[in-house]
Image (cartoon, rainbow, N blue to C red; front, side):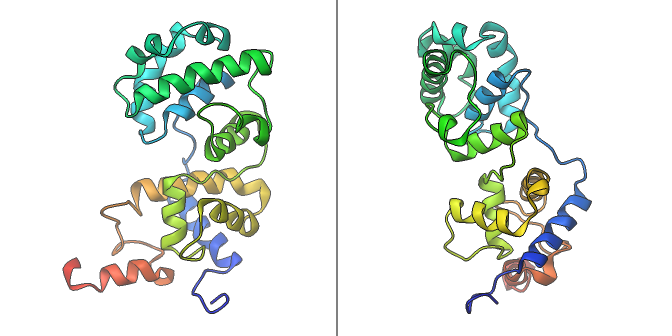
Length: 224
């Protein structure tokens, strides 16, 4: 209990993430990108799309547009055929082109490596920026995507109404900085394969004893 609200303590949060890591020791980024620029593009494209779907379209995209300069020189309509299998591809094409132009004109053709600069780019929110900082520049960050957000709330690592930014800050407080990225990956895999959005595997979950959400699901008559 924290402030009258049931929440995991810092130690309980770390212990829960340790269990996740033990179950998914291979957890790491599943997005492909051979350069920092290409990884940034892939991360932008991953919004409301699976990493698998993104990885299906990026080889041809990366081959056609190897640098920010090459992508900055075209129009969104030239990019759309490469990514039209992804959701929101019209908007994403605009983001990729505008982002590339901004990298060329404002950052001398190099992807910036601060949160403030990255989030100033088209299509780059805090989560995308955090992923790029952590994966490409080894700068400690704790990206909160839909899986991390869902797992944190269901396990009561955070307060019920916590925003994604509040989730990020809470996890950064509970987890040592050197473990932020591994914890991020562990929580993503947990949300992707164990604590799924529609059919979570609560009955067989090793964290059921500390999860009030899971207990409510398994005790429901509809569960059986």
